[in-house]
Length: 248
Image 1 (spheres, rainbow, N blue to C red):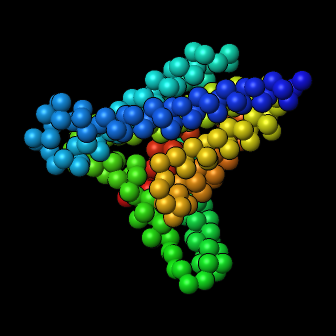
Image 2: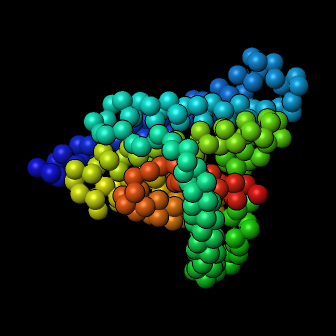
């Protein structure tokens, strides 16, 4: 009986994830250039840069809306998103160290994986820099473009909306949603979905190496921490820190 209910819930979540992350985001990406032209922004900024920035803003906004929809339709206790202002310095310092640590571990694992690939696939030579360069062709490229066009605080806001929503979805919502089946099942379900989500819109496997390894490390650490202390703010700061180090 538990397996039946679990797979029903899992099927619903997978369908929602695929519909949003694959199809709705594809539509937003498709219409971003038209939105840039409709707003007449292509007259004032380089076409590729402004289209990437508009795309990023639309995606970040849709992330927040998707969070709200999931919170409203899933029968869970709302994730803790209230902010204790007195604890902001602690949240910031803790999240900063956590993000830097996850970034370091991810980089090391990525380097090991690349070396294994080079050993197995003789005649092909890849390095960490190449994989990171290919990976920068995705969302990281758009964030770099947004920094050139938007004020810094707006670029950070868009970044916080995008990656912060992922923490709400995969830690705050999905962990709680699958918790009735046990902490271990909830953990591996939310973690697996978070890792697999990184593969969407990756046209080359080399570009997916670092995002998926990074998501594996971050998903593992963040999920364990959230199960112990269900507060999202330090995890959001850590996610932003991780992404900022990826950009620079």
